[in-house]
Length: 202
Image (cartoon, rainbow, N blue to C red; front, side, top):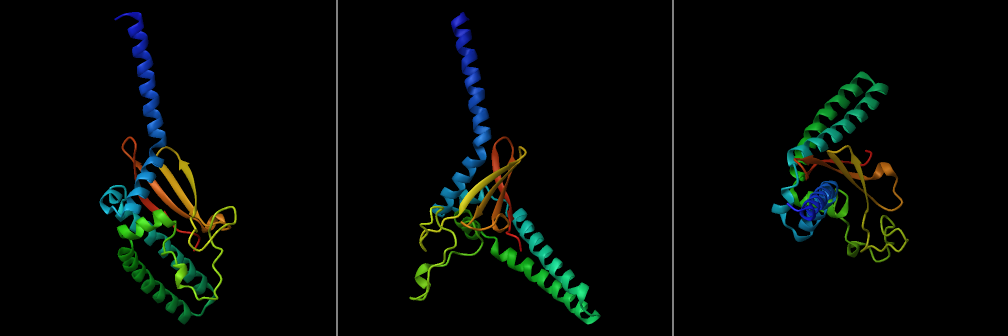
């Protein structure tokens, strides 16, 4: 091999390594972009390839059950024995309902909506407002030009180590603890899967 060929081979090798490193680093953003495109197109098959639904359900059940337990403890500490027993029974009932509701809710169409709108509940159609009802100022563009038909969430990201990537969504003017977090875990070299939905402070 001639010196020129050896030099060219080294340059090509370095370029390939750099390209591979760049792909690895930007892979979570690429995965999110692909998921949002699949959600817009209503392509549940492509979308589901990047979602671990059992882990999503467990994450939501844990957060909701924890919130119910915290409220029950607050009531029990200041109530009578009858009140404590009632709170405990109500907590058991609520937890059972949470499990059923989460199982019914975590479906492709619901998760695709979260990827689009950054929240669990459907966006309210501005056409359903009363004629004299003022449009909500929730969300909108950061320049203050929000309209009922243009209330896109503000997206931010956070990388935790090499295996966890979090996509946050919040509305303009909302506090940090009111944002929704979509947690992606790395699988393999550069494949990312949605495994958790972190709810706003309950």
